Length: 112
Length: 112
Image (tube, rainbow over all chains, first blue to last red; front, side, top):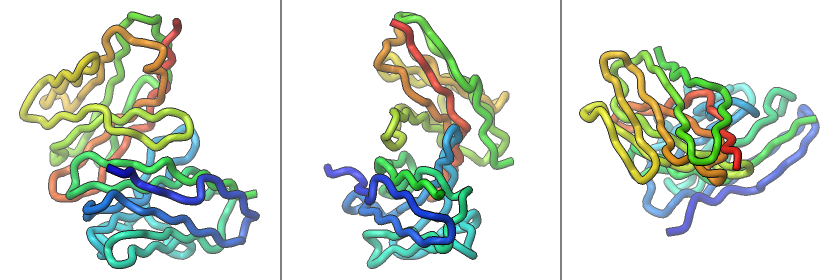
């Protein structure tokens, strides 16, 4: 089966600019996650979708981050405006219904 | 109570040796404990997982040991190979679609 697709792979932006990331999960996976992985740390959940509804966004900085999952399939994560501390790898993952995740390769964001 | 504490931060093992990574959790509601392996530039990949109704699970050279009373679990990599050099994350979650909490990671280097 095809894996979790993410784009772009890399992005460099200046602080206060906006950026968007895209994720296409494994077909049929109801649950989609966006994680932030800062260098040298474990992934931290930003938002979890079940189909196209939000299950958990308690750690999403809602003043600058937003996410949506259109028709319960693809998802986009947006940052506006970006800060230096947002430099990280943004990982998308999906699972059929909890349990083990399949992660994408991530988008490495550098904010300068 | 949501944390998963992982040690050591880094580990160097000779080829053919045993690599041991330890994790501890606090939330007794956790009932799924996966380990993920991450190579540079890639997303984490599910390696092996255990539920608390068993004390040990083995898949090839990888074994999880689970101590429910101590709230600890560990990953043992037998006959470690240079190709095992990667970052390993322990994690914990609850059945029912709850988010997975990741440890901070262990960077393993296997010397040839």
